[in-house]
Length: 194
Image (tube, rainbow, N blue to C red; front, side, top):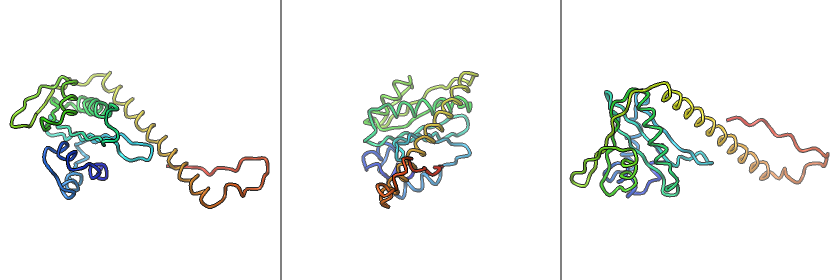
């Protein structure tokens, strides 16, 4: 998460945090996340770098959501997917109200808030948007369980594919390819674990 946030330029960091922030601020922010109460969701690329991150900060029945997506990954629905996932988690942890704070010029977050039917109030160039979260039910618990399992499966596949690519790169870099005796059999592949 730290690497993801540090990869944001000055403008994107201002959009994410509502103010211009330094690298040190970003480090302190990520260090202060309390994973006993808060939740963080991410979307990984094939190199296991985070393309998008949502931080759901939970406080006494309310939660504030912060979302960031790298410029190269925008326009693919990642922000919407992260918001939907965070909202589902908020529902299942009995959060009563989900809110977002952003600058008025942050058009992407304003669109997300409107799509989620969030009530928005803009003052002095800043917008606070919030939505009441319904209580959980069997379908919301099942949906979150499925989302979690699919996310873990996706991460597992990407990890295995990355390990295989790295192994093949290492194997070919050592000159192993092309020097194997022709036995008519494919060389045995080592077991690849994450």
